Length: 320
Image 1: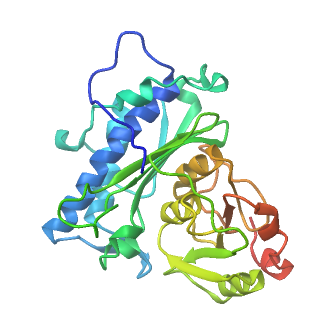
Image 2: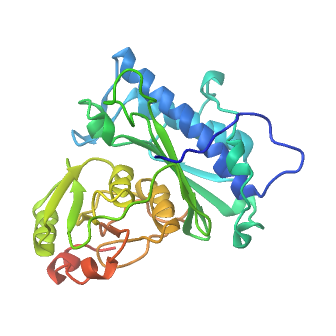
């Protein structure tokens, strides 16, 4: 049985909770609205696809509308927070129907971890991927798609929200569509059932649409029992925390900070670990370069087992 946060969307109370919890509570509601936008664009049939850097780097109407919705909604409530989104969009007024003013009341009831109670708005950086898995969204591989809102402090991912707009979409017309997973370091992660991969099995999850000789060389060296190829960094981390895979391995540039910030926070909140292929932690301050140039290695458990088996030739091919 999945455990979902029960949320009310109302004005904040006079006794305001800690800033971090208010940001996470708002991000939860904003992500739910984003999911509705994603589904509405798909249902309308006109995805408005444009190529950014090439056929493997697409942008849709959903990417654009969702980023406007998330960034404008959070900026209105938290004007001093730095918000960095994937899409390069022109500045301008955002339609009021894209603004989400609500929040998740259940999140506000939870005590903020003491190390984060004194955070100020200007110390937070929010990394937004409005539609993680666009390459899968366009042909209708809907279960790969996520909306990612990551929250960083001091260069570290400390909280995150992952929405799956199409969770349960194959379960029939009466199924509840979509879910939102969230987590905070020092508190835990919610909205799913934490499960470990089968003991003794080495199941690797990796890219579906951005493979290469180096990616395959790295996976072969790990001698996995099974390889799962799916789209979206958010989706891959969900494979780890729900026990469908034991390691997420991507030995290539391509993944960016908005892809990993929210998933990292949730993975770390439940005791997992994510680094680049060379073992370096990711940094999420506002000045950092956006590309994770040295790839991704993530596990819920047994990180050292996989890290020790990455060939030096692979590590040397990837420069941080």
